[in-house]
Length: 340
Ligand SMILES: *Cc1c(COP(=O)(O)O)cnc(C)c1O
Figure (tube, rainbow, N blue to C red):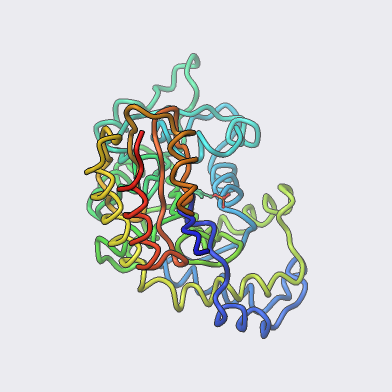
C-alpha cells in the first residue's frame, strides 16, 4: 500500500542515482582532512553561496549551534524570530552550548525587519546582555515556509553590520526560498558571517548539513565541530549524497511547492479546518476546529497519509522528493473523506 509521508521533508530515502554516487565515493579520514569527497562538497557549497569556506557536519542543529558558538561570547544575546529553530527546536542548545540568551521577535511571519532589530539592540549598560548576533531563518519553518526577498536580507544584514553585529543564517531550506525568489545562491553569502544549509531536507540526502562561512572563521568552526563530537572519518560516502543532491535536486523544488499549495487549497475547503497559513514554499500548516490533532492524525492515517501535530491545534504537512502527484491525489482525496 502506498504511504504518503508528509511529516517532514527529512523522510526521503536516497534515489538509485544517489546510492550509486555514494557507493562510488572516494573516501579518506576526514578528521585528518583526507576525504576528497568531503572536500569536494565543502568547496562546492562555499562557491555556490559566494563564500570562502564550508564545513560538513552531521546535522543542521550542529551547523546552527556551531555558527552561534563561533559568533558569540558567553553572556551575549542573539536576536532571532520567536519560533526560530535555533531557539525552539534545538534542545536548548543555544543556552547550553554558547551560554547566550535569545531576544525573541515576532517578525512578519518570522521575517525580521530593520526597525524590529533596531529596537532590540541593548545599550552597553552592564545590566543588559551584550547583543552580538542577528540570526535569520530562511525559509521560516514555524511560519509555513515564509521566505525573505533578497532586498529584505540586504537591508537587515547591512543594518546589523553597521551596528557591529554578526549575522547567521539558518538556511535549512534556503534553496526552497531561492526557488521562489529566483535569486542565485551566490547573492546570499556576502550578507552573512555563517550560513547553515541542510542537505537532508528537500534536497533528499540521507544525512548532513554544511556550515558555510568566512575564511577566518573556518579554524574555529572546525574546532567546535570536533568539540561537539561531529568530526567524522570516512564520511565521503555521505558527502557524495550531498554533492549529488546539489547537482540533481535543486531545480525540482518548485514541484514540491506546487504540491504543497494544492494541499493547502484542499485543506482550506474542509469544514474541520479553521484556517490555513499561506503556503509560500513546501510547508503546509493548518489549524483544526472540532477535532484534536491526535484524532485527525489517526483518521488520515487510516488512509495511509501521515502528517505531524505541530501544536495543540495545528497540523503540519511537508512535501518533498518522495511525494509525487499520485500521493498528492491520495492526500487530497483522504482530506475530503474525513468526517468528525
Ligand atoms: C530541520 C531544520 C534544521 C536542522 O535540523 P536537523 O534535524 O538537526 O538537521 C535547522 N533549521 C531549520 C529551520 C530546520 O527546519
